[in-house]
Image (cartoon, rainbow, N blue to C red; front, side, top):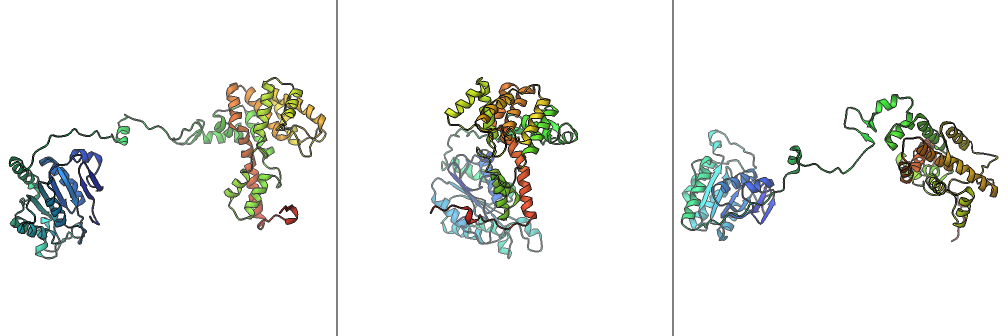
Length: 477
């Protein structure tokens, strides 16, 4: 058990535990990618990295290195580690770097004296500077404090030297003494210096290469509608303050910049605002409002209640805009007559999206539809898709008076006419916007205003938890 306060240990070229050896670059500099002939042990994690360097500079490198930690009572002790080294035939020489405090080094001296440790040992105890003070000095480690003269670094260095360890006069000579003992072993044939293997190729540090301009990181997110990196955030390159000051832009203009990445004509911006006003809410009984109200009355927060309402938007509620645009565009682009289009839908048993109203008819028109039709007829140079949809309406209302072009269908065909005739988009761009769901986006944006209103309304009225009345349920169980 190494530690607890340890940086770890390592067997170069084979294994390391903890952060022994430091960064990858240091593993190469200290030749820790292959084993040598030296086993070392120390208390300090920082000094273990220093020993890796000292040993690499003065010998064929480290075979095994363990930092036992600076605790007063560590797990494994110096002697435990050195006895491991003694039993390892591949370790020819040992290095010990102790410190002031504790009696671990005396145990090593006893093992040298009685022969349990016979391999050459170069040792040094750090902390000799503490003897210059007339009071006890506590160094960084918990155990680095001499409790009596025997625990001073000087006393332990003298005891190790007396027991037979190679002890330098100062730490400055530590590396030189390691080199001298190593060379004696090499000359005696105890250590056979192996050929140096090729140095492993270390992956370059990405941040360092990036600073040098040698690499670039592919972006995880690509954004083309806004930018917050400058002094002021922008919408499609236009500073937000400028958007706010431009009276011709307004909310519709901001939406144009964010959705279409360009300034569009004022009549386009105003049409978006007109659509948002006319579709912001349709009473408390429709799916979205109902869900929002139920969630609000259940005590849910604004965002949760809003999500509950928005989640109902789809083919049967709100999603008719996208479907209406798709169906009318397909029929118009195929040059089908209104009659053929209606017959085709009937044969395929397909409901024409954007056609039909629960109570409105030609004689009792939806005021919102009238308003939108009048606006686009006034501002657009031509409205071919709207004209086609109105011709379809003439066919369907002959079958049933309520099969009129409803507000969803009217907004859908008018929006496509805007995209195709405003002169700002190619035909493929206009069609792509419809395919990508821009019309449902318009409905979601506008209806969010109404759903927030319903949430606030329920909170203001302090409405209790909603429970659906049983007399409104047909039980089939």
